[in-house]
Amino acid sequence: MILIGLSTLIILVSVTASGIGLATADQLTEKSLHRLTGIASGLLLSSALLVVLPEGFHMVSRHDGLAYSPLTLGTAVASGFVFMLILEGMGLSHAIHEEHHDHQAGHGHGHVHHPKSGLVMTIGLSVHAVGDGLAIGAATASGETSISILVAFGVLVHRVPAALSLGVFSSHEAVTRKSIWGGLLLFALATPAGAVSAYFVLDNASGSLVGVVLLFSAGTFIYVTTVDTLPSIHNPETGPRSARVVVASAALFAATLLISNAAGFLTHEHGTHDQDDEHDEHDEHDEHD
Image (tube, rainbow, N blue to C red; front, side, top):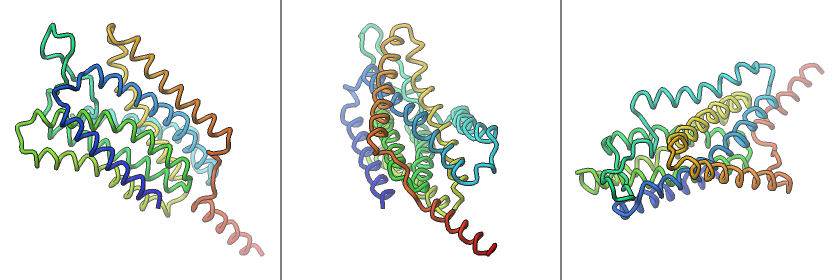
């Protein structure tokens, strides 16, 4: 089952990146995380705008599209964005770099630190990770294997800088190694837990509802990429470089998607919801007969 494979891969990437963050806590600089975050944000932005959003609209239009007005669909996207904003306002921040600071002035390379406790950071990142799982679970429930892989890829790439940061921040906490790894494992398991839960809830739901959930997830992705990139882009010292990294990353992934689509790799499949709709149509015809 593709969901099991994707979940396993997410756990491995999360644990590995967190472990690297722990091991290189004194060497990892804010500049390197900025660059990595910019690359990941560009990929996630392309994934949101070119994969998740179109697939959400496609699912709704293909399955009883008249049930939802354009305003309702737009509200689903906006709701995802606002939901993430509310979480941030509650202190459950996922952001990596806006709270970093150079603790040694004049050294020219600030090491990464964070004013919040490792526990708060772990909880915040884990809550956001569950939201990532919602997108993967919904994509899997749509029955489109290629879409599921692309959504998971966007989440995976963005997971690397987040896991690295969490590993670094946790290493500065005055807690046992066991407690640190407990928090890292919680973060690693959050997305698979969200994905599996979303899949089982949506697998038997209408295709149009799956589409609405995908649109909600697209809104969360757009928020994440915006919050991750705007601080460094607005910084006079890092702005031009950060913007170039994000645009180049987004453009490269977009070009890859377009080429893959032209080659026929992203053709839509007839998934579970298509089959259910076909059965419903046959049943209706039988009743008329």
